[in-house]
Image 1 (cartoon, helix red, strand yellow):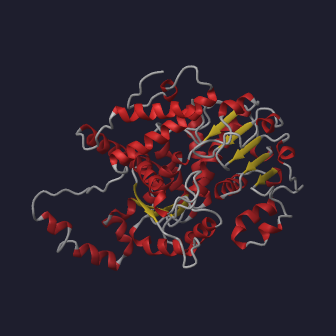
Image 2 (spheres, rainbow, N blue to C red):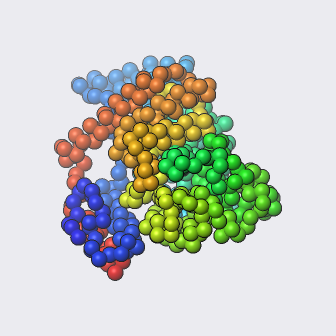
Image 3 (tube, rainbow, N blue to C red):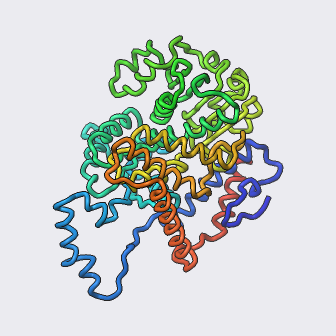
Length: 484
């Protein structure tokens, strides 16, 4: 057990050596939550607005504001597309949520999602060189219910200020209507990261996991545990990538999805789930233990564990089993327990375990690629291109059962993703301007480096202050006490 340092390079060393793997996993979860709370309070959040233009004398205020800025306004009036050149719109993303499904914590009230939305903006800047604004909105109607049309109207009204919109933490079924309506109604990309983002990174992980175990996507049997926005979109993208839907079975809180689920068919709001009822599970298997028997892959995006996925299910699966336990903040089964049950490859959404399958590997590069070519939307083909981009990047570096994904410190993966997504946008006919792969890659790398250099300078000059090491020590103590 070592004293913490600001690098947080090895979380395991912060805790007693005699902790079991289960105790260690729990302690790390408590530690990260306590430290997050303390540091958010210390900094007052984690995002600020800074000018990117200089003031070299008093009259520059007349340039940046009135009367000089009048020419900018009239130019944009006459051609709205010039707003991408004359304002920050071309590199600005609205991170929009009604906070009805925040991580594993459910409805946190509109303001409750601010920590997550600021977090998305933080990662966009550091990993993709993209500016983001957290916008948590009140979606309640006069009857006190969450109304998807409220979010739709809000995004439509805000569209002229942004180059893209990242929807986040909107509960189902509202999330389906919000995304599908806005993708068609808006002339900028509207991306639902919980759905499309999770789908893209999970597909990337699956591609490489199957490469490691030498199995073909079109032949594997896949069980999905959880049928929310994330897993339904994961399934949809996996099918588009070549999986056989007749070899797929999905479970929600009521049971398995199949053509006999009249409850889903009767509710038009769940049309995405009904699509999967029509395509998957032709034998109408209803028992989870029967479904997992002989299955090659289990993809769980359901409620936080750690005993949501049972070890006995894994024991019934095929050789070289692949397990994705991606609930946050606690996976449905801890990797060590899945391995003990016979799993060959285990992935989670957390960076303190091997094989992190997390949206943070996807959305910074995907959004950057869409922004650079001023895409009007992000197509499913662009999301699949991003998945192969991530998978191929990791494969070139070397893949194994403990490494099927790139890591967030591999900066070039985001630039490669951006370039692959931008090229696919041009191919799909949704780009306003054309850029070559090299142009997008170099632009993205330059913007990422600029963002990191600026942040480094702020830290060096103490404008970003170091948190007191006591905050870390207190978080460790609370974690140890909570586990013991």
